Length: 123
Image (cartoon, rainbow, N blue to C red; front, side, top):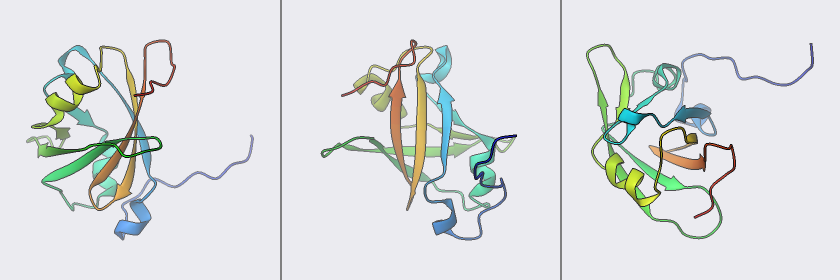
């Protein structure tokens, strides 16, 4: 098989080890009020459960920071909740859009948006 470096999925021992971690999520019909984040990301947080994160649109220039509440359900799933609705409306996120989220550390997520034909949206 082809070479390449892959980060082993494990719990992060420090905040700096988690910096640069990226993951993909998809906008579904029920994503307007909350968005589930992958369980792997939550596990890598090593039980450091943030109450809030900041979202920012990826790219050059200054972009607004969005304060978004993080909620954990009884099954230990992690969701972006209060504040997420405004982010969805502002960037006109639609059913079937893909988001690439990168963790920048300090509870900051950088978001790249791809539409249903897999083209990156520029805002």
